[in-house]
Length: 314
Image (cartoon, rainbow, N blue to C red; front, side, top):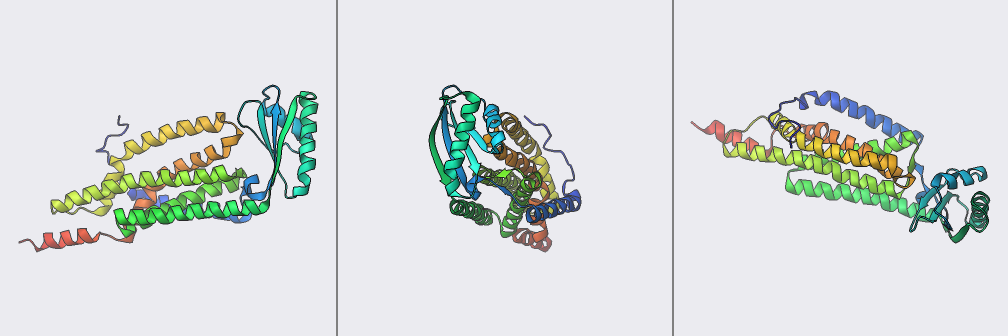
């Protein structure tokens, strides 16, 4: 199935300066918001109290939140785990001594709402801020190691300039996703870190498809001893893979929109990060990775040799 014919000639790279200016503005806004507002770190990073409960009948998450709101815990993370009658409530707090009081308050509020002996407290656990710092450090290292590994992979498979283009596109995508969380104030937790890593993989896949087509075309041109302008080769590669890119992105977006609106609060941040990441990742594979790769060098070494050989022919 092809939404767009492979012989389409849309001048994407002709608009690269405008696109990169837009990207620069988005990056600037994201960085400013990250510095000014920062991220709204969840209990995974800041520490807090986890209260595991079991109900006699499956409760609605909205009703549980309604019961906790008068006690000041309306912003708690509430999610089902295991069976529908098991509910985990996560309250952000920085003092382990307050955990007992929090758990008692939560239990009293639930009993008042659902009736006495309708709720059983199964476990109370405090997650200290030190654990949160270690998790944050591990998340940052995971993203950095992924970037380094991707740089090495692309450099070995293609060339140095391709690796630079791919990695800078990933930095672009990651920064904008983090900026979206700073702007919206949505909770940033470990599931969002997983989403950021997923965005890196998705964006790289789109970029590699385009780079692979560029390499195939350059190889074919060298064999014919007819090296083409690399800007034209890159533009043709983007057009030839455009149908595949749009179909893949569209189907992924359908799933993510379903998760965002119907998946519940547990994966709300995860779905939001992927929604932003897929849109920005698709954009960057066209307007960031390829232009940066082309800016690094006008022609590859192999193309230069092919041109010299062609010029030397009688």
